[in-house]
Image (cartoon, rainbow, N blue to C red; front, top):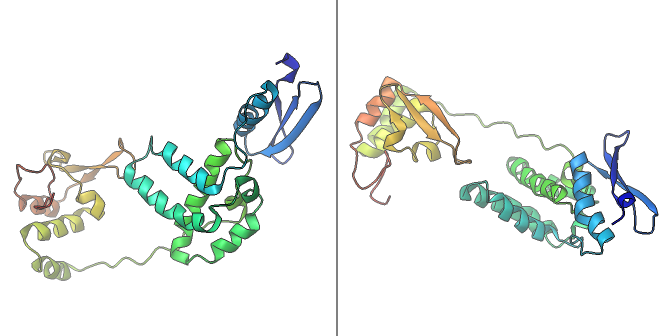
Length: 257
């Protein structure tokens, strides 16, 4: 490919980025309104340059469902299976509506997507639309589209948090009385630390540091993340009620673990 066929990018007054390049006949071309400089170069590398070299280009007829599968497969390299499973469930909703639509068409369907968002219940709208946006953002990075129609459809505000029920000490005692030793200790530990069920259920004996009076909580989304949570006297007392078992590394284990 001749040197003058290489592409260039320039920033538009709108803040978007535009590609400019010469074809093999020396004719200059320009176009696109990419969200970032890197997105413009990605499109050039995946679409324009292969055409200039006579090679096959990235598929432009890719459907939204095909993009979702591609995105989940690649995201699974860095995310936990639980995260992928949750994303798959959230994306299934938008797939039912737009799954067979080619990305080339979906890119211009911000109005239809806004209408779809309006049909989702308030509690589900934020997570479902956030996943929709995330998948389409991956489509931009991969070079299949240049803008995110789910974002152009409008804001995606988080719903108002539900009011948290706070139990009194007497109510907590009544709840604990309904359970056996292990389950009661788990309730007391959860109340003393404020950990989520998925967090305290995954605590291992090695995570408890009685000397420093802390417990290490491993991330539920990324493998390396963890944080320190202080252990109050009540939390330590709850742990004292749970004898260690040789058949499980978990603190709050049952016969099924």
